[in-house]
Length: 112
Image (cartoon, rainbow, N blue to C red; front, side, top):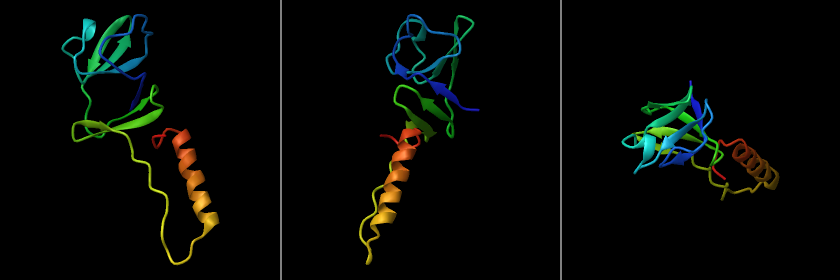
């Protein structure tokens, strides 16, 4: 199961609702002090912390994109390059590919 985070922050928000989560940034303070790099989850008025694992995915609502945990770091999927070259250039096919990539960006599969 993968979660959605509101974003990355160094300090907990003043009015965090139960069921929300954040990625704790480096240099965390307040209730998050010493929890750099962990996922902070708000439950029953308390903060729960979970270590991220390789292979984990989160939806970053603030960035409107998916993040993947690979080799100890969070990575956004790369947007594929536009097609170039070829002996015959098919304008309609390239337009369809561009529309597909734009749709995947809207759905937060690729960064904008």
